[in-house]
Every structure is written in structure tokens, then in C-alpha cells.
Length: 485
Length: 79
Image (cartoon, helix red, strand yellow):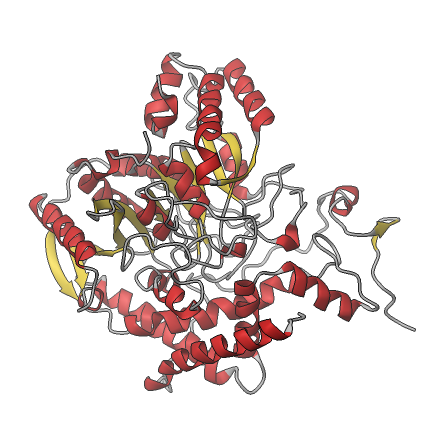
């Protein structure tokens, strides 16, 4: 039996019925990783021994039969979320050798739910990138085509799920870093509303945008994981004390009369024809299921990338000031502290991180603050209002997740601006704070590469987004296709 | 943050491109728009200022590049 191919809900059923043990499931995943990760390289570090003993402990406890939501389910974690006793490098040389001294809020939630923590997945350094090519530790391959990127920044998590090297994974999304890799690897990726999931223990990139969320094989699993992750946490001052609904229960029912907004700014001339055809096909399917289509406008869409790259870099320049060689991570010696900081940061950070620190510092500097950072924050208000207005006439918004399917390695590394523009459909929603999911909606023909459909919702309305995504998924077969044998 | 000469040259050109791209924000009139700092309705989340247990010093110092007697060691600051 190939346990590694199962979803959370499928494996959970077997564990509850006692058909398999957590130890067998964990061993199956470790065997799968052993067999394919030499090629994919989704993992940076594997929790081999400890994962098996966690699984054995779960078997002894009988937690699966007691109905613990993730008892015995092996899950991978992006290398930016702290797990006590495990390395946490953010795929950066500056954190080589760092061992987490505490659990992130979400890690604690996973442990309480009985999950087996499999290991650390690759990513763009400090979550800055769209292809995972900015990792200091090497390339993760797209399981559908080893010559192509797995997306980013949560590329390792998406590739691990797509290649059946984890039952599910956690990622983080600042401008699309969950949804974009999920789309190009053929997975489901959910970015919760800003404030829905605590970031305590997530290494901060852009604090007004970062959210943690699940990358899974189907929408049911995304709902199951969100149920475990969501909730108020006093350790994150941006965590909102909004009641947590029953997400898996919200999947049922129909979407008759659901108003789906299509933003005209997202369906533009020059769009990749195969992406457009897949998304148009998905819209027809949704219509066939009873949804109503409403044309809407998000007039400031064209400014989102510019706003994002000023706000995200400004916040990053402040957040990454802590990596100075004093308290943890790399230290390159200097005659005085200033020289030590300079040498440490010069040697420890990769080119994209440096570029963003410089851009962000510039945008915040005296004399340029008003022209760049403050102006970007004002345009952010306009983008937020666009969404507020649009959601007066629709319940969800549907768009492509990405402008193209997975691109080739090296295709955009020399031109950072082109790389930034590949996030054009996912960035706005982080600026506005709303939630969104990407679900598989088709494939390109030659080569065969997954295409993602993005469904965006109102703040704290993950239920409607998940229900629309699930209803679509259940009417299609895209999510059942797997890349490797 | 030290940069090599090559890095400096390459990055100057790239940052120039990016700055000219973000200049498109000047097309908009934002004179009557309030800035958005974050997307939650929360303001001034406060808690009581009280001493609580935290992570033990020895465990934190395990990740330190250089330490002694519960302290981080750094190069000399004052002559």
C-alpha cells in the first residue's frame, strides 16, 4: 500500500480504524523521501529518528482513535518557522547552524494535534523570491519538470507535497509565497486572512503582510489544517480574537447563487493563452455549479507590485537588522562592532536579500520617506478600498494564481523586476489583508505543467473561499493527477 | 553591510530599474488619502507590564557566536 500518496483525511481514517500505525505511515514517508528527494531536493533537513519516535509515541497514546485531528499525520515545515530543537536557517548562510530554542505557535498547535514533524523544507532566503532559486542551499526541482522552478518562496513545501514526500506542509505567504508555489506544483495553497493565524515563531520578513498557511493535496486537507492553526495568540499582537468557525463543516453545501467577481484588470491582453483557457474553463464549471458571474474592477491593480516592493522591503530592512553577528548565526570578525556587522552581513546574506535591504532602507531614509514609503502606504489604502468596494457586489473573486505555469531555472534570475512581476496576481491580497486559496484548474499541454485558480475572499471569510474551492475541486479531477510514479 | 565592487555595480543598475518602475506611483493623486500601515482593525494591543518566565539564558547562548558568563562577547567598543 502506498501510504505516502494519501491525503490527511484518507490517512486519518486508516489510522483511526487501526488499519495502519503512525509509525508505518511515517516510515512510508521517510522511504518516499529517500527514493525521490535526491532529485527534488525539497528538504533541507530531515527529522528521521525523532519523527519515528514521535510516531511511536502517538501509536502508544491511542490519540488517533481518540480523534485528535492530526494524530500520526507526517507534516513538513518551511525553514522559516521555529521548531524547538530543529535547525531554522531561513535558507540563509547567516543562520547556518542555528537551532531553534522554542516552538512557533503553529508548531505547538501541530504538536497538540498529534502531527509528526518530518523536517524542514527549502525556500527562497528569508522568503524573498518566487522560485526558491534564492536559497543558499541549492535548487528545489518542480516535480512535474526537473528543469523548472517549484515556485517560491515556499517552493520546498509545495514540491514536497506534490511529490508525495509529505502528507501536507506549512508555508508562509507575504506576497504569494504559499499560493504561487502551490499553483505551479499542482497543490492547494491557502493564505489565511491577516490576523487569523499567529506568526509567533515565524522569522519575520514583512510584518504587515506575512501569514502562515497550509499547502495540501486537496481543499478538505486545507480546511483541516486551518482548523488546527487558526485562533488568537497573545504572543502576536496582530492576532485577531475572532471566533474560529468549523472550516471542514463549511466545505459542504452548494454554491448556488454564490456571486463570483471577475476583476477585468486580471484578464488582460497578452495573458498566457493556456492559463487563460484553464481559468475560463474553471469559471464555466463554477457557473455550471450555480454560481453567478459578476464583472468587477480593482482599478489600482497595476500599482500593487510597486507598492509591495516598497513596503515589503522597508519592513524587511528593519526586521533583518537583527542579523548582525552578535547573538546568533554567522559572525565574521572585525576590529570593532561596526566592521563586524558589515562583514557578517556582507558574507551572510545572498544577493536578493541585500538588494531588498538596500531598497527598503532607501525607501525609509530621511528625504525619501515621503516620496517612497509613505506614498506606497497611501496607495495601499487605495488597493484595500478597491477590494472593499468589489466585495460589496460579490462573495469571492476569481483570478489566475500566476501569469504563466512554472518557468525554467535561470529564466528570471538576472532581472529582479521580471521576477517581481511574476507575483502580480497574488500580491494585492496581502496588501489588502484578505484571504485567498489556489486550487489546481488544469495543465499546459507540452510540457505538462499545473495551472492554478485563485479564489479570494473577504477578511475572515475563509469558509466561503474553501467552500467555493471544494465545490470546484469535487467537480473536477485536476487535483488527482500526480507528477511522479 | 559590505558589498564587493562587482556586487555594487550590478546592484546599482538593478536598483535603478526598480526605482524607475516604482516611480509609477507618482501617477496617482494621494493628497487626500490616509496611509495604511497594516490590515487589521487592531490599535495599540497592550498587556500588563509584568515579569514572566522566558527562555533560559544558557539555551539562548548556545546559538551565540561568542559568549562568557551569561553575556554575548563583542569586539571592543570604547577605546
